[in-house]
Length: 199
Ligand code: SAH
Image (cartoon, rainbow, N blue to C red; front, side, top):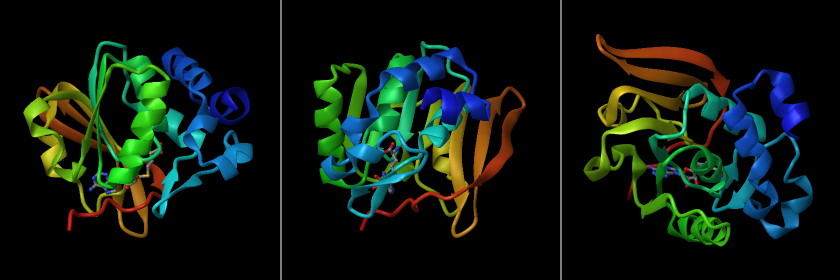
């Protein structure tokens, strides 16, 4: 999977490739879907949600330019697969999921794999995790209708955020906090489930 779907499409960061190689993706998909766990497509994980396509997980992780010592906020734990890829690379991952059953399921898989550098929260991640901010990187895995300024505000100096923005037509943005202020770069067209608001 790493060679044919990920490296072949231009992801070359060795930390990302090693992490994707190591994380057993089949453990994050429902039993009936295990046969498709390494296919080049998103898969349903229940509650109307999906686990992202492996290439997109690798692409978004690479875009964060991680070196290993970072504290990262993830919005949308979902299956926990992306969480595991991040946790392989960085020092600490803070992950927020709005659907409690998904958070609990992800946590049980991630605990069974021995990840001790992940903090979990159930709730609306669009406000981030203010008590633990600032973060070196923020990864949003559901689409925001517009650029989430509260998350931009939780980026530390030199911090980066990758976030899909839009409703039907969505684009992946890379936001950077630089000395002169924030820059927002458009990367590519994508299709994510929407970020939902707490009811
Ligand atoms: N990274 C995930 C992809 C999950 S899909 C994976 O690798 O499996 C997006 C996830 O975002 C879903 O689980 C959805 O429930 C969650 N989500 C949607 N709106 C949210 C919000 N406001 N706060 C936190 N999580 C949210």
